[in-house]
Image (tube, rainbow, N blue to C red; front, top):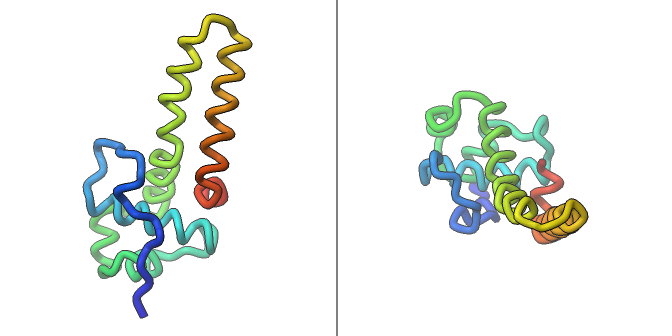
Amino acid sequence: MTTQAAVDPRALPRVQHYSEAQQLTIGAAIELFAEHGVMGTSFSMIAEAVGVTKAAIYHQFRTKDAIVLAVAEVGLSPLEDALAEAEAQPTPQAQRELLLERVIDLAVSRRRWVNAL
């Protein structure tokens, strides 16, 4: 039984150094981590969700730790823009408010990601 990943990789924030195949793997891993936790997710589960062999996943990421780091990097990359916007605010209070607003918006819009991260 093949399970398709619920995260559309085109909806993921683009982190330039990840290939399309890696983006598919990251998208599947996000969903699986959210559902089963990192420890409860295996390379085999990720491969099944992507629809490829386990060897194909190992070709993209040599370890599960590498997948976890990629998931975190992609999931948190929108905060880089939020930080830049906050730093442009005129006062420290305005900076904190804008950054907090962006973090909350991200957490609400990506509840499953927050669970996975």
